Image (tube, rainbow, N blue to C red):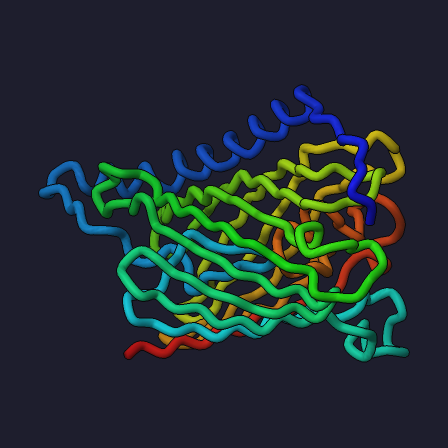
Length: 304
């Protein structure tokens, strides 16, 4: 990559339309699912305790959830992405292809604050993260949403020619996650984000704005269906480099200390700014099998 760059442009109409769609979906689900809960509370005393955890894991598919572990909790993450499924049985639908893996460890030293670090195989990325719970949804819906900030700093420790010096190796990601637990089965979150790369090729922008919407629906006490959609708002000057949305869907199996998610998605990167700024596989350019890959997330909690 080169330190000189030609900025991508934000498309205001594209951003406005997509944001309206995100918010419409979010609040329509809320009107349908939440109204029954609110009506049931009319004749009872308001319960202003925080809602039960809207998600079972801090990870959901390719990104973070609004959830933070309890104070004193260590968490170990194994995040894995296989190759694309296009070759079929010859490489076991990508499982024998080169994979991308992240190993991470995080700790919650005080209530509402988690710090962590990890290493990702592709480009040998070393990441440091912080996550802070700002607002928690209440059971009475006097506070209807939970809001969490997530941010990281990532160093590219690989030896590729595109990285010239220490400062150019760094990138940063900031995200505000807004979630609602509509009922005992359904939780939905939206998350606008901002990514910054210190050093980029001249065809790319240093800054990328994007947003995601993710949902989890419990099928049984331990099994849930999960789906996520991420949309970039930053356009390249060169049309053939325009970023495309990413989609993932799958299943989650969870216990009190473990969560396992397996899914299909079109993002190989694991650190969020890599997917936002350099999404490799589009939803429209080519066949489904050439763009999608199998991924899984495993998280393990220890509380002392």
